[in-house]
Length: 268
Image (cartoon, rainbow, N blue to C red):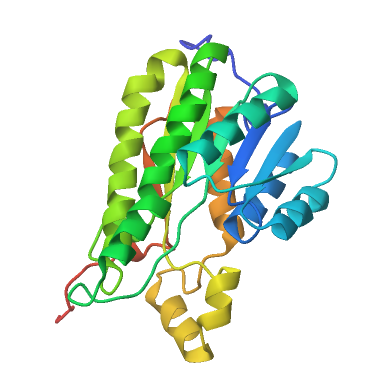
């Protein structure tokens, strides 16, 4: 206590704990999803339902994180898949405390050459499935006293997305979706936020980047390095925990400072 302030000081570290809670990580088998699963378990999660369309990946990450891991295999981009996941996850511990949705992927095509199939695919895998999951889990959380939802967006939703325009448009829509989700569901004690990664050295990027591309992307960031999947998992843990208890409807950019750069050539 200090003069003029007798408010109690909370245990701030405990706010980052998620002890006894049940989480669902959609897209858990690799990269950001794998790291997020580990982050939640290390913070005390009782159960992490590890969701992937690939049975081997789902089983491997569930085993890797230990007794808290539960593998679930299915396609959450369909209404049937999203509904089944919500029902199965709820049956494990009687409630769901948090959802982290990492499902999404970009195809690289010019606007003039882009097919209807690519455009529709991007909207489905990056935006429509988020509608399905947030509806299914929102109904569960609204009955059980609340929870958290975290969605992985992209910096491509903030600026131009050359050669992957449909992906950028879908991610922009996802961030708008999260804002409205937060407003509509806030009264039920549900918080919804998003993380917007920049260039992250995920297993997928490691497979396609050569040394020159890695150096170029690292040098483009004020921090002079590329992001790691653990950086995105850290942001997801923040939004999933009580450390962010009064934060909802926000998108946190994790890009090493790239979006803060002056966009014009410096001529001084």
